Structures are given as C-alpha cells and as structure tokens.
Image 1 (cartoon, rainbow, N blue to C red):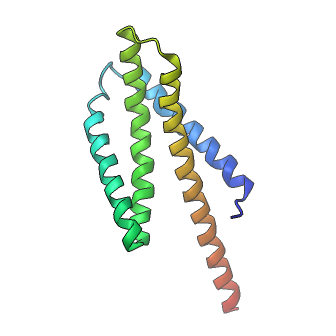
Image 2 (image 1 turned 60 degrees about the vertical axis):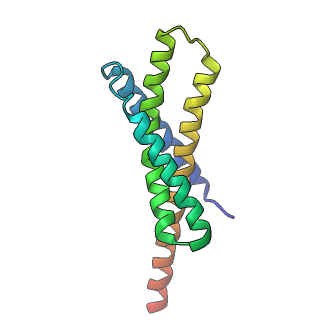
Image 3 (image 1 turned 45 degrees about the vertical axis):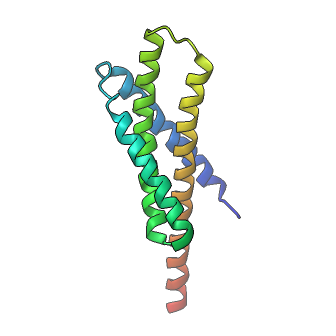
Length: 137
C-alpha cells in the first residue's frame, strides 16, 4: 500500500500537537479532575472491541468510521486520564518512569495510527472526486 510521505509527517505533527496540548491541559487542571474518565473510557473501549468483532462479520463502512473516530476521541481522552493518573502515582511514591512512558507512548501511537488512516481516507476521497470530475468533462 502506497502512503504519501506528507500524510505521515502531517499525522505525526498532528498527534504531537494533540498529545502536547492535552498533556498540558491535564497538568494544569485541578488535581484528580480527569480521573473520573477512567470508567467511561473503559466502557467505550469495551464497546469498540465488541463493534470491531461485529464488523469482522458485517464489514460495514459506517461501523469502521465510527470505530475510527470514536477511537481517536477515546485515546485523546486517555491522554488526559493517563497523565493525571501518572501524576497521582508519582505523588503516591510510584517512580516507575519506564512504565509511565509506555502508557503515554501507547496513547500517542494510537492517536498517530488513527490520524494516518483518517488522512489517507480523505486523500482517497479527494482523488476519487477529482477522477469523477475529469470523467465528466
């Protein structure tokens, strides 16, 4: 599969900006204000797992789009949650920096992955529209 290199750069920069902004928001927010998201995010993740299993059989494009965008927003919220969770763990004495970095890295990779797919789909749709426009002439 060919991927335009500009998509990778754009997705990386977008994921980095999203990650930096939401991490900063979690750090300047009142302590423990985003920890309530844990249960909701776990429920959404379970829903996404079930819908992805269903989509193996039904092959619905709408279900895939829902999974893609819902996953993007879920992992953005996970950046908020995980950042505040790490702050609380460190204040409680848990100094496992490597595992904390892995948690945030997983969030970053998931955001990057979904942004790449979204940008590729947008480029394919724009290319199809351009091809249709050329055929009509």
